[in-house]
Length: 193
Image (cartoon, rainbow, N blue to C red; front, side, top):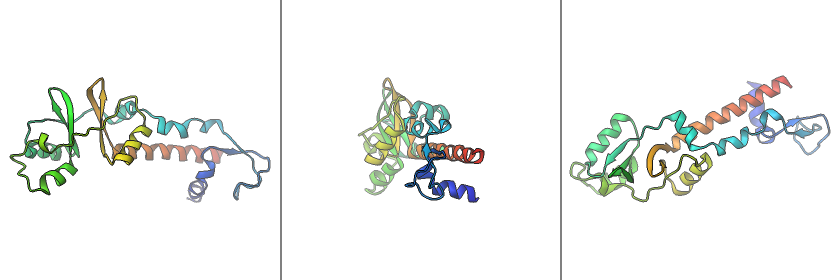
């Protein structure tokens, strides 16, 4: 437990460096007097996380995408979302994505204004300003869109065809897993040192 606490405490200093024997008084205790130097086992992993492609995330998550025809009633779409345990569906017209319908749309565009979900078509209340990713975009690209535009679900298009969807939860899970791997790598290096 102590070792893990020590790694987490000094992670900002350790994430790119290991330590040699030469003096370097600007580094904090207990590493004062030890020269930082890049360690081969750590090269690449720190920068690999934000540069990971969406294609790789989809290969792990799967490429299933829930869709709904633009003419479907809101009641039917929400029922499907509940059955599948998902927070959004991509709205399709003639095989092409024209919008996305999310839990937020249900609350703000159906419930709040008092619309009848049995009579309202999903195309009337979907989000039409669709922001998408390509399989070759990176995790960094996705995080930038989510944090800047407050989008929690981003469809992935390959040559205009929907091939997946990435959510903020997917990205958070991926980043946490990668950070855990980094910490284990560092703990292993400290143990061997």
